[in-house]
Amino acid sequence: MSSVPNPLSRTRSEVFRQLRRELYDEEDFRQVPHIFVIMGASGDLAKKKIYPTLWWLFKDKLLPEETYFVGFARSRLTMEDIRTASLPYMKVKDGDSERLSAFFSRNSYLSGRYTEADSFIQLQSHLDSLAPGAAANHLFYLALPPSVYHEVTNNIRHHCMSEEGWNRVIVEKPFGRDLQSSEELSAHISSLFTEDQIYRIDHYLGKEMVQNLMVLRFGNRIFGPIWNRESVACVVLTFKEPFGTQGRGGYFDDFGIIRDVMQNHLLQMLTLVAMEKPTSTDPDDVRDEKVKVLKCIAPLALSDVVLGQYVGNSEGEGEAKLGYQDDSTVPKGSCTATFATAVLYVHNERWEGVPFVLRCGKALNERKAEVRLQFTDVPGDIFSSQCQRNELVVRVQPDEAIYAKMMSKKPGMYFSTEETELDLTYRSRYKDVKLPDAYERLILDVFGGNQMHFVRSDELREAWRIFTPILHQIEGEKIQPIPYTYGSRGPKEADELLKRVGFHYGGTYKWVDPHAV
Ligand code: NDP
Ligand code: BG6
Image (cartoon, rainbow, N blue to C red; front, side, top):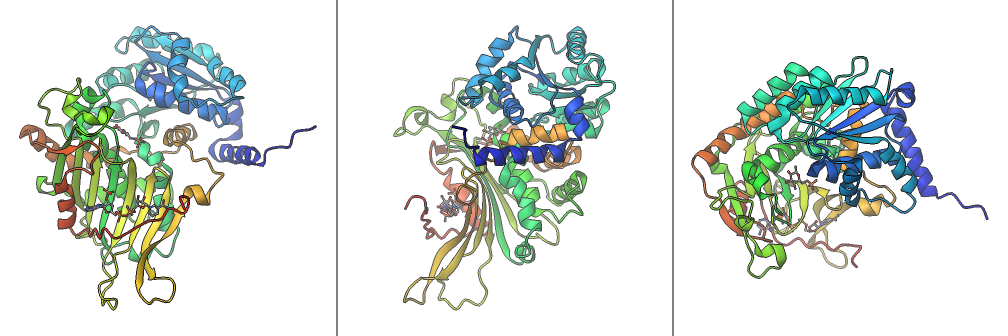
């Protein structure tokens, strides 16, 4: 019996074919060798994100046909070691084995020293040997600690550039620790590469719903007229994680939650919510508008911030019993914040006076990232204060959704009001669509040469300008964060700050998940 083609997989491969057409010139796709070099191939990011992402893209045939992957790090490893370390994160399915072998046959690994020119000369001859005589394009992913960025970028520039093909360098956060160190790093990198060769990654810009913010705002008539200070009372951008530092406390302690999440992921979301309509979707038109928003924001003041640090929950289980300072890699007495709520104002005609509240924290009650616009009260109330404010929520994760909280007549023989929602839950509306991981989207963008979802140097400078004074103050004055219990919503002072700037929490909204009924 002949097998019936699976309509779903056909649809997926059609989608991928179309994507390939959009991304690449046909000839480049088929004939030009591309070499993706993972600097720091032995590390955590490489095994958890980069190798799995490259595998998914390779599996779906989204990478140019002749693409090679080269890992580079100090450790003396074999490709087998890399494979063993990455496999648990690669979500390999039954039936993938042939394609998986093909993927690993395109992979190689070289150990060398980041500071030694000789290692990079060897790397270059290895790259040349993969595509002899061809004008290969080179992509370098810096999955490295910032301490070696200077040397590595120098060595790449002087020894590993493709002469005839193009070269692109993907730089991971943290981009410095403050304005000065970031400027130094930027100046160094810009002295080696042109801006169009540099891809500064903020993986939140690769998330489905973050990218959707632009379409939602500028592809709909209904939102434009109310997206301003006349109608919006408050914008709340939230990032919550239900786990602590999980042994990464040593790294985290050096940065803290403001550098780890707020100054980048949340601020990027803010710019997409607040920016004016760009003249086009050209990457620089979009980033020009984002920079303008940042330029309208004054440096954050300590009076507009609440800092927290989690402590163990004696009634919790496992890791929840442990506080931040119980992590053996965290220095005792550390003042590093694992939670922060901060209020920023965009001083322009559209947003003057509207608080943008950025909230982020580890070891909280749930995993959630969202954008919430709370609208002002309806003027001239005729419903005896029964109405709650409207809210538009774009839930980035988990379970992507857009919902508008609104008042409606209570169904039936009543003439009273009821809180309800217009609900676009992705898993119900788009049952067969697999949403790609943020890194998949972004790495594909680097292959395709699209910088829209990457951070430009002037965006970075403005972001650090806003946060550097307070970071210096917090560290200089050793400001003590407020303790909050592992698994809670964070310090109550954060809710008080929200209330102070005008956010209304009614506590009356009840959502009934249609899937749970
Ligand atoms: P809520 O009224 O529960 O919460 C609204 C906001 O108030 C949140 O930002 C919340 O913060 C904040 N808040 C909660 N408690 C307090 C407090 N004590 N003081 C001050 N602020 C507070 O409405 P939601 O929009 O969050 O919806 C409730 C639930 O229903 C959510 O889990 C949501 O995901 C779900 N829902 C799902 C939909 C879908 O899947 N399509 C559609 C609609 C709702 P915090 O984030 O810290 O809790
Ligand atoms: C990273 C932070 O940038 O983002 C981590 O360094 C955080 O601390 C992570 O856990 C969250 O990413 P995601 O995609 O899981 O929300």
